Length: 199
Image 1 (cartoon, rainbow, N blue to C red):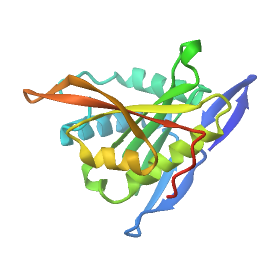
Image 2: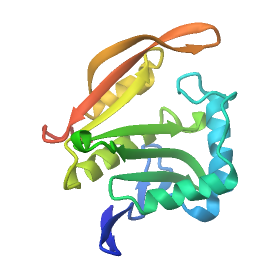
Image 3: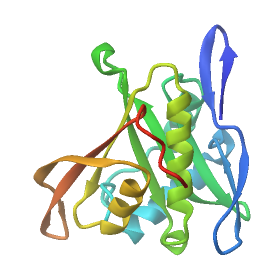
């Protein structure tokens, strides 16, 4: 993962990297590409239908194809964040990213998000992606803190976040409602100057 100068501004591009899951499956990690906007939309539609543990609901609108292309372009031209696609045999199976807060007084902080196709959960991919994002953030010249929110009903994700060093900051009672059931949101954060958690 590197910063590449472009027109005097820093452009956040994740340098392609191959990793191997504990079960031997090889995964390519790279920045999402504008040419695969349709496949990214199909990925998002699939992952939201597989999981009740994320905020994105099947009833929510997806971006249009052009909006998705614009989203990819904007990520590649931003100096405050990075997005990573995990690709197995040419298919996107996970997306993860960091987005810096835009307000000047909060630019030391960035939000982190991750989603994985159900078939590839519990196979070490989430932990790998989290370590990659934390490493990218540690190299950023401004970022000091990563934050995220997770459903209290999603202990699997909570375990991964704690594994890489995130700690609970507080809870937002009944902030989400899934299939008629209220769910608390857990706010978590990681200060980047703290000791790195081993992979």
